[in-house]
Length: 544
Image 1: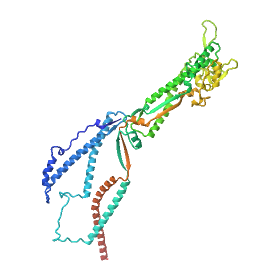
Image 2 (image 1 turned 90 degrees about the vertical axis):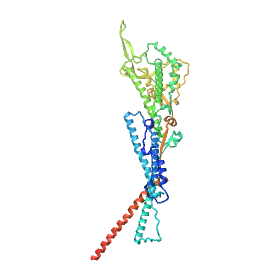
Image 3 (image 1 turned 90 degrees about the horizontal axis):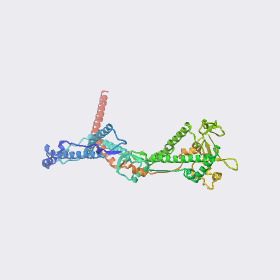
Image 4 (image 1 turned 180 degrees about the horizontal axis):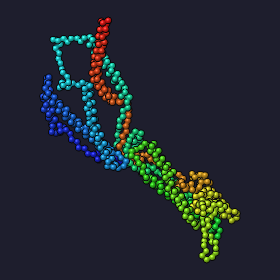
C-alpha cells in the first residue's frame, strides 16, 4: 500500500526579507549601474553596488527555485506500508523524512554553489570591473627590468617541472580510477507495460498498488475425479444399484445371517457412493477457499521467484491443506461410531440373541465374529473377511477385492476396486443375481492408483479420489493485478565521460592551489637545508 507524502505534509516556506518585494533589487541594480563602469580606472566602492544586488537577486531566485523543486520531489515520494501504521510509528516516519529533507536541500544547493565557485576560480576568469586583477602599463623606454639571476631561473624551471610532473601523474591516476569506478543511476517509469517490465525484470523495483491479490486472479486450478465416482456402480438410480437392492430384499427374508455378497453388496456400494460424494464436495470446497485466499506482495517479484513460490503453495495445498481437514473428520466419525457401539441395521457388528422363549424375555446383543471367529467386533472395528458370492450349482465364490466386516463403511474402505476393473468378475455377479444387463467395467488406464489389486479405497479416499490436476499460472495476470503505478531501476556503468570530466576538473582546481603553495615552500626548505649543510662543511674544513 503506497500513498504520496503530499497527502500528509503541507509546506509553508518563508524567505529572508531581503528576497521579498520590500527590496526592489532590480531597481537598485539599474540605479547603481551608471556609477559602476565608466571605462576608467575607478576604485570607489560604489561601483560594486550594482553587480552585488544583481547577484543577490539571482541567489534569491535560485534558492527559491531549488526549494520549490525539492518540495515537489518530496511530495511525490511514496509512503509504502504493508499494513495501517500506528500514530506513533506514522509520526516518527514523517518526522524522519522531513528531517532528511531539511538537511539535504541546503547541502545540495551549497554543493552546486561550491562547484561553480571552484571551477570559476580554476578558470581564472577576468571581470570587467577589475576586482580580481590590475592592469599595469610599464614604461619600458625609461626603465629596463633587471634580468633575474641564473640560480633563480633554474629554481623556477625545476619547480615548474615538479609541478607538471605531479599534476600529470595525479590527473592520470585520478582519471584511471574514476573511469574504472561504477557509477549508479536510478531511472523511474510511470505505469510500465508488461513487456517493458519483462525487459527490466531483474533490475526494476515496482511497488504494488494492490498488496493482497486473490489466487484465482492468476491461477486456474481444476481437478478430475476417479472414474468409479461417476459410474453406474455409485449411481443410486442405476440398474446396478437396482439389481443389488433386489438381491438384498430377497436375502433378508431368509433366517440365515451369513454376510454373503447378496446380503452385503448394497451397503458396500452405498457406502462407496457416500464417500465419493463427500470427498468430491469437500475437495471442491477446499479448492474454492484456496482460490479465494490472497497472495501478499508489496512489490513485484521476478517470474522465477514467483513461479517457485506458487509451485510451493500449490504443492502444500494439494498434499497437506486439501486432505488434512477431511481425513481428520472421517477418522473422528469412525472412532465415534466405534466408541458408541452403534448397531448396524444390517446386523454386521451386533446381532440380537433371545436366550429364553417366554413373555418379557431379555434380548442380548452378541458381537459378530470374522476371519474364522478370530476377530470380534466387540474388541475391534477392523475385523474383515472376504466377501463371497453364493452360487446355486457350486460352492460360494470369493469376490476379488471385496471385504465384509463390522461396519459397511469400514469394510468398504479396506476393500479394493479390483472386481470393477474385471469384466469376468462383473459378469459372474450379474449371472449369479439373475440380471440380463451387461455392465461395463472401469478402465485401468484411466486411473493413477496402481496396483489396482492392492490399492485400498481408504488410500484413494485420503486423496479425495482425485485422478489429475489441471493448473495454469499467469505471471502477466499477476502483474496486472499488482497494478504497479511506478517502477524504478538502477544501472551501473563505467567510463562516464561527464563524471570523469567533472571529477578531474574539480580535482585539478584543488591540486593546483595546493601545489602552488607547497612546491615553493618545499624548495625553500630544501634550499635552506642544503645551504646550512654546506656552511657547516666549510667551517669544519677551515677548523681542521
